[in-house]
View 1: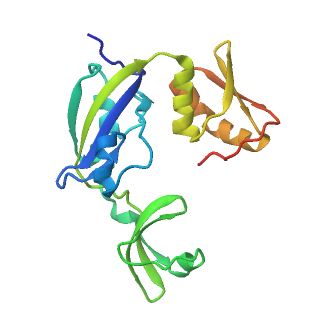
View 2: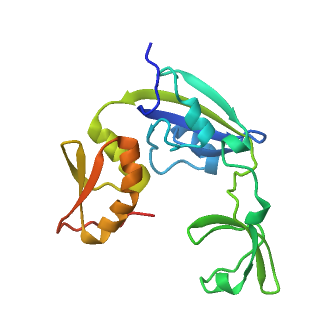
View 3: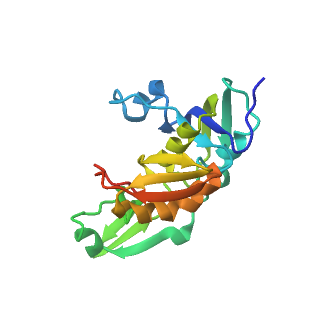
Amino acid sequence: MIKTNKNDFIEIEFTGRISNTNEIFDTNIKSDLPKTNNQEPKTDPKPFILSIGHKMLPTGFDENLEGKEIGKQYNLNLKPEQAFGKRNPQLIRMIPTKHFHAQKIEPQKGMQLSLDGQLVKILSSDRGRTLVDFNNPLAGKNVTYTYKINKIITDQKEKINALQDFIFKKQFDFDINNNTITFKTEKQFEPFIKIFAPKFEEIIGMKINSKITEEKTQTPPHK
């Protein structure tokens, strides 16, 4: 019987629901995707590859993955402090409405939008002032996950590419030599790799370098 251990790379399928409503907020299972938006998915979802013990999923979910059997279905209930945190009143702030107008946004009560790279909710907007909730939309909620671990990943290149998808949000070409990964990148992306190298090294257990190439990258990585 194969069971998972901390630092294992695993391929996992899961669906996350808000416990009291059963509403799906996250899934990589095709049959559950239409239930999130009432329409057929445009692309097939892919199983998620992660390293156990490195908080690549909510803390309580990550901690639950250790010691699990491959191929077995599991159900997990998490309280807010184990998932997306408790609601913090200090994260509700008043912002001048002109800040939104400068970005050609007319704030409306109940609107969810990205503000300075963070998902926020508009609570009210009146007389030039807008009340904004910076709490995670799932903060304060009990959530439930159903999941299955398909396999343990042993291929080093597959591990590296999975981490690139998670940390860089894109994949760079790379070489492996003497326990060192050297990413090939354009000059403009080298600082980006250096910023995230410590986290990459922590998870993969290898040293990270970068090498500037003349090859053009079509899309920049997302921060």
